[in-house]
Length: 278
Image 1 (cartoon, rainbow, N blue to C red):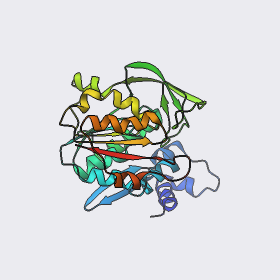
Image 2 (cartoon, rainbow, N blue to C red):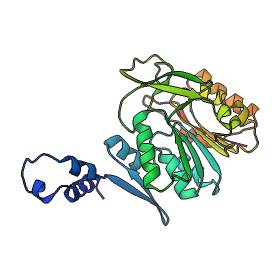
Image 3 (spheres, helix red, strand yellow):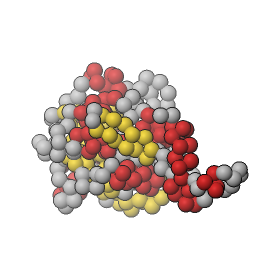
Image 4 (tube, rainbow, N blue to C red):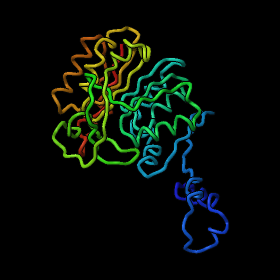
């Protein structure tokens, strides 16, 4: 259904008749709270429901299968009850998809406040509290207290950076907004039994992937880790080093997969997912 029509239908259901019949009448708080814009995506007999309170969130749902088809294909190969760690989960598109369509246990990390709130709304509305655990913190190469520097302030936004005012090219970017934030490492979380050794790891943090991976070094040596998806900016030496480091740990990737994933134009030219497998 057209999303504008869907929002209009929700509005008509929510607004009391007296208000709806009065031209120019203000929207009541009760009517506003009753609005529930959302989109349901089907995978076979499975329904996956995503809240869409704004246009960026709606865009993420509309492009779920087309924006990163390699991520959807990667998730399709997972087994039920395997463990996925989603680092840079945003509003939970792939977290929810993996838990709902594959029956996985997912640990999702998203430090930005608006995204985290919507991530949890999606967890709850899909009945996944027993399968998905979300953490509002950053993963990096150290435990630290700092700031998360925001590129924008709304649910569904991206390109935020922990500890430094940088863009996805690792170049200085002045941020109008920031929030207090805590970072830790995946190695520390596994060592403290906060979560088990994952079978699959997704890392998409818009530039600081190399730091996240350095904080995963011990975990990646464990043979129970079967695959790691990393968004790599091939223009950066720090990111090209990731490929060599993963090879040294016994991971390989498909050049065909990477060639299809790399963006060829625009601000993110040369950026794309690399799926490393043992």
